[in-house]
Length: 271
Image 1 (cartoon, one colour):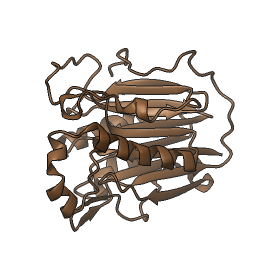
Image 2 (image 1 turned 90 degrees about the vertical axis):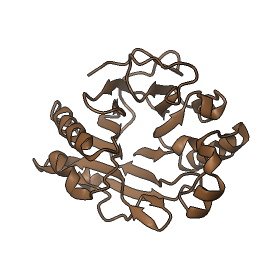
Image 3 (image 1 turned 30 degrees about the vertical axis):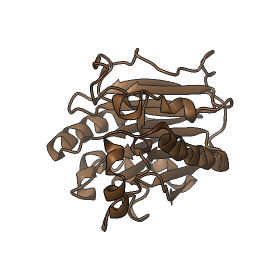
């Protein structure tokens, strides 16, 4: 079995989406102390130890910014069994921000304990453009965090659908798609019938006070549908829930891991 988890960590600001947290902890958006970050990251690490995923994918991880005291959060999550650790700027491979820029350090990341290959790619449209293209145990995973702007999301999903069609292999598309206009936004990805919406009936994954929405999405090629189990797990440190995906029959054979884990990478492929 291959176990994958995905979560938007909200930069580990310890805000669960409730109005109480948004009011009482509003200052965490401006600056989050290291102790607050470590408390949130500690809960994530405990969950990973409990679940023992083979691949853990994260949106909204900070690798060091003015807002968090220049603290590299992925270092607090990586453990000895993680043979590949990757963190990348979500805005673009060639983007270099000044030390005091609010965009500096804002990243996505993944941790893996099985052999894999991967590429960090960037969509053509939008500000948040990073997509991880990973192959592990014969499964291709595209992990994305799409734009808050509807028009840009439409362009991004159309491009992502073209990327899915590049290869006829078992594929998972997962991430925070920000579907504020509902699941009809997924039409470009679902139109040809190759992908199915795995968590269509699993309930909301995001909250803002009383508002609930399914923003975090998992799509599968139909050849995986009968082999997969999906669960939505509570995250008390973020306004997003965690997605757990178990795929039966995915063995551990594949390409070897890197000789040295990648902690901060700047050689991503622009696409």
